Length: 91
Image (tube, rainbow, N blue to C red; front, side):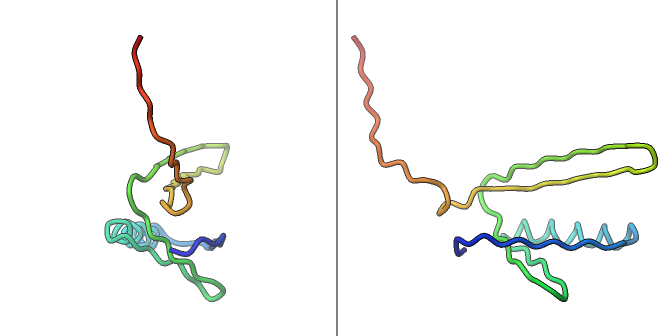
């Protein structure tokens, strides 16, 4: 995957069945290693690999209830390569 900063954001009202379907497609994409998000304005392709970090938060504030699910990972080409060798000694 090319190293470029891109951002996709979509916000809309959906019924619970539609949200379940969206989550199923995201889950399937994660298992296949490729998830594409798009709408009329934009598109982004994500390629999750390796260990994924999961963060789930749930809040209830007066009449507004919210569930946030964040999935993140490091792309190997973005991680700095350490070429230092290890040295171990005992006295």
